[in-house]
Image 1 (tube, rainbow, N blue to C red):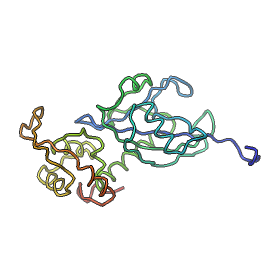
Image 2: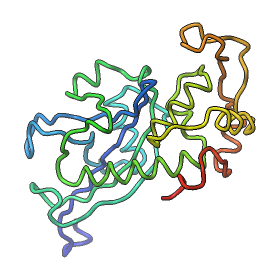
Image 3: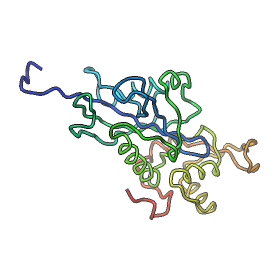
Image 4: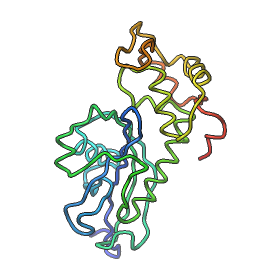
Length: 234
């Protein structure tokens, strides 16, 4: 602080909103705090930015500590800086949201942080302004999933179109027409038919697909049409 003697102390935190999909519901990974302030209450996973970190590196560190995963889908969402948002000390928070495959995460790491997967509908009251952060992230997820193929980040390597449809129905909480949805997905060219069937599915003839990783990366920022126009409201 020698170069800026008149500057006041403000902490910079990172809060991570972590979404997963269990095949039926979109879930949120939340932490029950074991320290003050707000000990015993639910919050997002977060931490303070280290002096030698970029924001993205700080988010990656926090996400890895909780999930044991690297190279997952992460996006910076928004910054929250109301004066009294944290009662302990003046803190500005940069929010990131991440999409992971639930089966891939480190369950021991989750337990060690006193964290739990909770459906969006059943999420408890959250500390500070974390509920506002989650609501913003949900709306952004809906917007992005309608136009870009980020939904695939929540699925296992092999999946069926009915599984993918359940994912989008969970994101938007609406039923989708099976034929129209299937037609839209297949028309993107993002799916590779593995030639195998899903023996564990109630739909015994459901074909297993995998994502065309090359086309996915090349065309990620292109605008697709996964959902009706009415669902693309930000």
